[in-house]
Length: 91
Image (cartoon, rainbow, N blue to C red; front, side):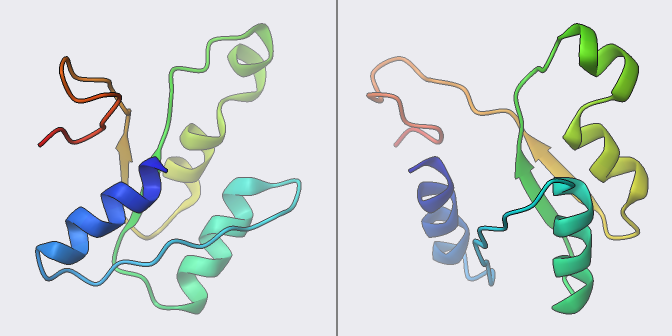
């Protein structure tokens, strides 16, 4: 739901935007490969703070994506705003 809300907002500003669902084990590689395939100008992801023992040693998917991608990556951490019923962007 958040991604569709963000897509609507971005398109409302006249900026082309695509949401793509990908399945696989190496999410960062899947995203980078798709972005290269469509000649994307920007990769925008929604991430949360992933603090686990595993992430301390392996790194998060978002960190891997940022470090491996030649395409700029914009990482957004969704927040709830008061009075917006869980809206990411508010009204």
